[in-house]
Length: 416
Image 1 (cartoon, one colour):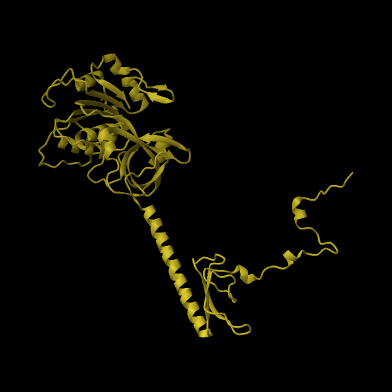
Image 2 (cartoon, one colour):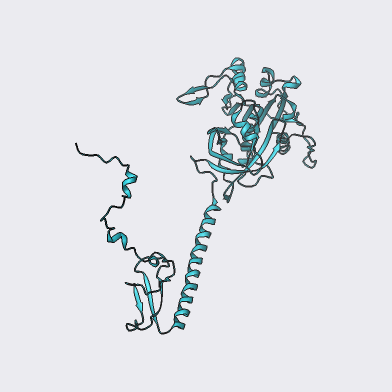
């Protein structure tokens, strides 16, 4: 049987020296070290062979060789050398110094151009800060405490935006974005709050409430200013019809965010000289600290300034809009700890106001009456019945809960 070589491959790559074995000539005779030391500038001690162009006449054999050489494209590409034959050592030193300076200037110019291009691309002006469907990085620029369990986060895109990139979404209606939790690799949708008078173009504001078992809410609640977050979107949730006349919003907790979006769209974003829609919000919270200062709004003259001492941040923004549109916006506050709740009577008064003093006449045949229910899942189920899953998506499902039992006539109900 033939013998087998049991040595590993690594051992066979460098065989042991045997008697009479000669190293092949192509290995023994290595090229001179200076051949491998070619830089952007030609520093060889001998003239380059096969240069691209030769200027001047080479000296006779045995005579001193004075020359200078450089690469045409400033990079060590073979056969792109320009060879200059010179008369003496002084001209050689002078020419080589000029070539060296020129090469450095050239490379510096190229580096500056590349740096400027990189800077412009990283700080480019864009019409949208999002790069859907990928997540985009934003920076938290401020955090403001609303209560012991809620805060306002203001975030800013990394790029500069020329004009309001969200204007189209504000005009259409309800929209949201997704936040990414990088540790758990999950995403959750959040509704941006409408901008106020201090919001910088491109910034987004969010009301975050920390829930006991909320993986995303606890992550966002724990972030500090200058932290990075990743967002994806925007996603249109509901397009408000142009002919909408009345809106009633039952909001639970952070469900006030989409309610404020509707108010902003109908009263602020859509510029119209015609009659504006009427919006009535009933905002329910567990504790008063979530809506400090919230009570039935009493109209004041425009010359009188509103006082917000001790008033919650969300309540302040709502009251400012009420002062601007006193006939178009009404907000009622109910608090569990104070024994006030949304009941059938309160809903009936919202969809069928007994007094036409504030809102004017109501057209029974109107097809533009919208009733929204937004908040935690239990809140939506209680008032409008659960949503249903269909083909991997949540659909509205049948109307149930309190609204289903009481009947809402020609009001169109939407669960958010």
